[in-house]
Length: 503
Ligand code: BES
Ligand code: MN
Ligand code: ZN
Image 1 (cartoon, protein in one colour):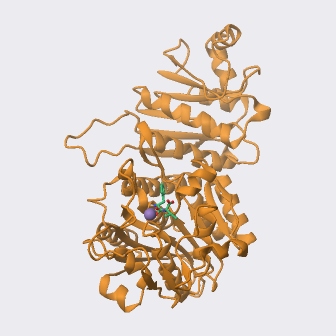
Image 2: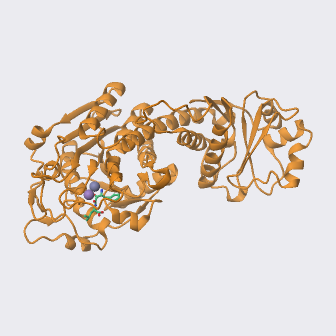
Image 3: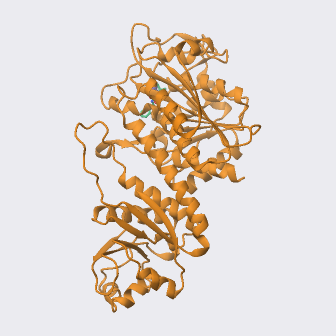
């Protein structure tokens, strides 16, 4: 889909010009309980009061998320005009805008229109600017068009005829809107990569496949890829990471991908993504029901790679490094057993009481590896605990950090991007639950506060830098009829990096 931006001024004459614009579908926002204004008013005038009569009859009520498509109205220049309800103007929020944009995207896509002029960013949203609205609109449109058909034997026809969308913005917003459109597309492309990797089955998306994806990104976007195989991982003494890979016939891969958009001396942001391409639980095997969804256990890795793609496409002036420990977690004759003690790269020993708590075992060595980059901050992203779904459901990502400043930055980025997180504690008091009689620590802390003790485990490997942990177990994919990867938290992470570039 092709996106562009054009200036139309908000004066009466400007809106009349927009009302005359040629397009197969003009998308117009209308507020609830309010006289027709702006573009809707201009259209009403040329249609000799048609809209006013529809408002009176209650056909056009502006209720948030409602849509009404009118075809070939006498006097109008467009084949179709789509009216989108924005709700009450005094309550119009970023969430409301996103809801309206999603509804509008569904309606335009369902029509046969091949192009559209999208004017929703002209409706002012409290605490957000036009550029934000352009970016959010692109994400809504791309979300509605995304499909995963790679594994179908026959090509499926596209689900829409829509090819071109033009954003109509005020002249003073044009420059920022153009940047926002570029950013929106880059984020959407990153999210699509993240979704594709997540949706691919475990027999295709193996650790080697993730490594090849990183190599391809490096080639396409001039990044540097360093991929370490089993021998090199062993040489680094990543005993904890390797203990997870032991049961699998797929060789583990340790992926390092570097984007150098900042000055050489500028400390990088390091993103670490959990890349368990299938989590059977290992010897502590999971129950069969729903086990297929454990192909999504590499969504942390996928979101980190998707973010790298977005950052590279945006050309941010920052240094960003992605680290992905990738492996399967499988049972087998060589697999790690409950009670085994392993030595991490940091030298700390770990008693593996449950082989299904494998995410932290691979992340801890990646977090130790990250020290060598003297990072400005390290953020790890992982489908780490089922307990996080119990705590926060599918709405918020779990955020853990000992740094209030970093936590606040990530929370704010999530709010801006509409990809929110909620902070949970990493406090000393919980560390006790990880005590082991036989090693420096156990890899599980019992059922109470399962997500917190997982974060506490990771914190023991992050003393040398500013660190935050995102538990995306509840937000990375959807179950049920709409089963599929969501692309989260790519919007949060890219927004965080955009904000870092600006500060
Ligand atoms: N990948 C899972 C976490 C998970 C489970 C994510 C369900 C999404 C849905 C992780 O490796 C795991 O198995 N965690 C265990 C930890 C437990 C053994 C302490 C869990 O959450 O049950
Ligand atoms: Mn597990
Ligand atoms: Zn897992």
